Length: 305
Image (cartoon, rainbow, N blue to C red; front, top):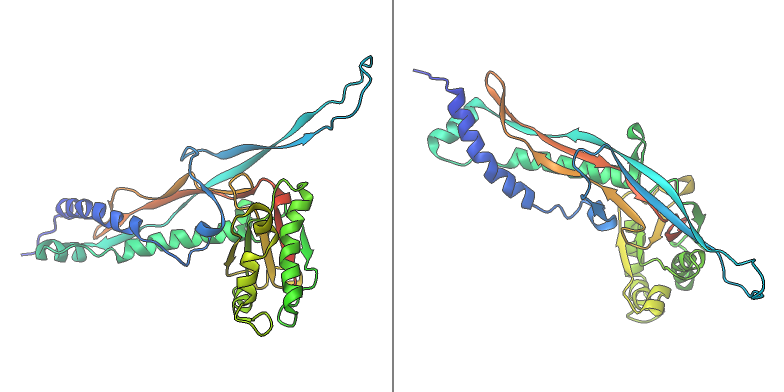
């Protein structure tokens, strides 16, 4: 005789979900891009409504004076307040009563496939918001942020450009950050469309075994100035991100003082509950803010490469 014991099914589900969630949270999704491109800050209170920060700019210059004068040059700091809103989102998973009964009676573990699908959906949404923004929430993304003024490449058209012209475009992007910050900062990271990174890794310098990528990794303004390695990455979405649908290169200093993505509450599974007569749901929630570009002078969009 069929016996429907919802409480027993729910108890079994609760004991299973802790194992499922541990497995899901340990899984790495290497093709998710934001984790490699933008520093992530999870330090805010999970239920904060906004993240407030201040950007500053120093002013003033020392000068010669007459010691009998009261006209002393003054230095100071200008503070500008910024607020990033934080919004809630959700993605969960569930099980049917029949599935739970079969697993319970056979003594087998519940599959984590649906939980992994939920976690993957979370990562994909954060990736989209971090890189492209979300107009419905007023978020701007790393690839199209209004605080950064796009500029055309010195030469551009890399598919038909010479090796020297390509190297010039990259070093100009790095150097422009140095110029605008009075050489107190340089771009340490270059992000390119995949097609352009493939070009750099394929085209050789003259009749040598050295590719453009090999050369630029060791012979660039940032490395020559600081002695540190330049990071060059590829990212989907830059193929048409530039003005007029052109390919865009991003040169920036990877540092949380420059840009940051706020995730006050990373994806979290809540306790399972009986959502219908024969169904059980495991909700998953998270709270997400946008990308702050706090120092726009240290980020460059170079279009038309």
